[in-house]
Image (cartoon, rainbow, N blue to C red; front, side):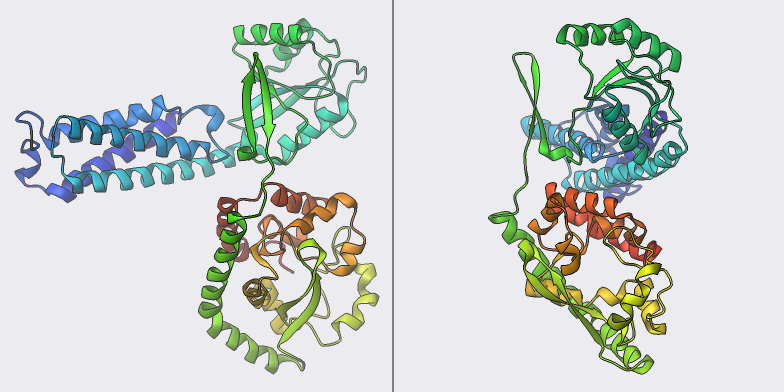
Length: 469
């Protein structure tokens, strides 16, 4: 928080002073009174505005620890605080008929806001690095049933950048000294009382208590626990049995003193479906034109490297189980499908996925194409035809779909994508379970904003080449 405060101060000073110098230069114009008043000058405004901006950021809660490190809430608050400040400046200028230079405000507001968000992003990378090594995180005592506790701990450990570090367990009714699957965390209590939980907090030095499902605590005990924890400055966190739910889908509504949680389901229909299709058509068309010279060059190299067609065509399963023909640049020999049975025993993939890190069927040019994901560029044709989307689950093979469990078939509710959460989260290095989890998360939490974020992350994933084989 101290680092953020210092960076905020530097950025707002840079934005206001820079706007002052760009608008008025080093002449005396900036010291002239603002039109409509004989007292205030731009030097006065440039002195007061950074202070107001810095305090506004604090008043809007942009430096609260619970919004730092993960999620968009921190960025939203920074933008809202800046917008309200300059909105107030505009209202005051209008109300008192002050002719504040539009160029001055037009430079200060966007440059300062973008600078603040950029500064927060840089600090977030540093914070995530610290949290990945166990620092700058809240120490959590997890309370709940054995199965629910294990699930919550594993979820928090998968995402250390969120800033929650499980340090101990409290499982009412559990007598063992450890929980299967989580041997590193001590069990500090099994009694279903406020005193037992308080004692566990004191022993492990927890900053917060996370209560999940599987434990029977009456409303009275929960209220008493909240009072007891508040006196010691310990946070109380409730973790309901909801998994893979994005923040925008959750809405809390207090009713009769009860915090009712509403979970909405995003539906890709109507205007949203049209918007996604228009976005796919326009961007895929632009990308095809942009990459046309590269694709032509790749075609020449493929023909010169090995015999066979330039494109590899394969039947895949699309939205609602509809089959389609997917296009890729050929990266293997023409006999690749015939040689598949003899390689099944050497599978490096997981579950239904077949992958080989050193596939003997891959050609020399094909190895380069796969390393940089260039072989997937012809799928832009599928996107333009409406068979695929730019972002979505991985397009499965018919043989994979035939072996799907019932819950996995929800992947087919949206069009398969050229890229997706699977692509930006490790690709072939992921287990089958993680691949399914990411695809289902996308289906359940689809949004245009999420698609934009995935497309941006795809650029980094392609450059890093992690899991590309």
